[in-house]
Length: 150
Length: 399
Image (tube, rainbow over all chains, first blue to last red; front, side):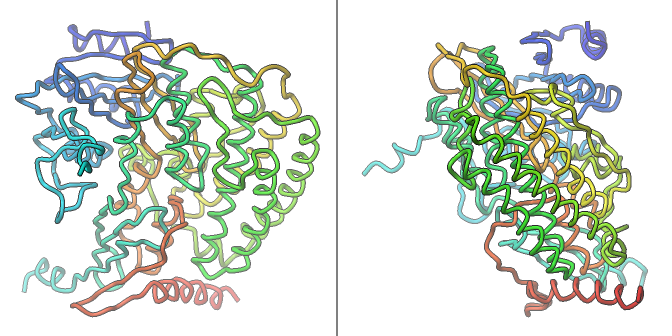
């Protein structure tokens, strides 16, 4: 087993590891453990955050933190699920500037709340002519074709 | 008056943007200055949000590479390559060896033209228009190679899930090699001229320093981090295409200033020439694409080293012919954020150069305004002049 994977399993016993292939690992963890897990991967294992992906699924909002361990070329993806009626995930931006922009992006495009973010203002959408509370990457957002129907 | 009140009183804002003349997309850099010194910066993006992640799930896997190819005009091969790598990772497809070699050839040719483009613009910003004209003239050889092997000078449409769309014929190989020889000779000339010039060295050294710690904290990628002593390079770390099969070295400098980034780009050009040559000489025979029956439900990550750093694509499939979610991250998303620390403590004359040093694309509307107390203070030409004057002063001093 990989060192980082073993360390993570020890740190978070409930972590559910899925190995897609030898360079791609997906690790599902409870959302309250995200700070602990990210600190372990970045600060102790020296991994780089490639980016986060937010997805609206049937079960809730899933946020994927893609960490790259460059010395082995392995992608460690942490998966966190936030229920739809409480879409909150602790912000990492206060200690990890790489998360600053992407948390703002997920907040405005998916409506996920990141409590603890030092500067939560819209990143991509306009601050004047965009309805707050309209989240284009949610499943219930109207698709373009329907919006322009006459 | 306390010390703090004094300093806030003299603070001014110099906005660069919203249509930044150096960027691929319109972006807005709000420089907070005290006198000539930049003390802080605020970055606003999103003026040209095109919603690729929103459009992509409406398209089929065959169509998506064409969509993501339009994200960037300069590195138009890196997005489709990362995208097809993600699709192949999800489906567990291995493209045939010949396709891998052709992918590496196109990708490295693109790096050569992109790096030369940056060197040219960098020269223009410090008042060395000869460097600009030379670099762009020598870049032309590479664009002609592209036209010959792909049919286009840009937007090559080379990648498809499972392989590549066009083969390189036996007759084309010697022509490409000849063009490479010419490009190598001229680039060597240019590199020696640039790195021997005391004024250029004085102008670029110790400007806009990004420390190694900051490069790691901001997860910067590509030449931006390799100029700060962080050796990350996806081509070596997670080898794809034919990168593991031909000899080449990564280029890393420790200083973190604009000069280090310029050196990384100039020397990487020669590594790219080495890779293209290695690939062309060992080009295996065989098919150029693998047949794909279907994309199974699951997830795939594809990343590759674009000229500006790692391009990252993530695909989630539900087993249909369209993805459920497609995440795209371009290198500038990480690199531009790090400008906040690189620009701090420098002068306004250096700001334009520092902001350009992460190599954002330049093909954008040239328009900008800088206001002080409601009136126009610096136009784009004024800022260029400031930068040129500093070069001139250095030149006088070194005479």
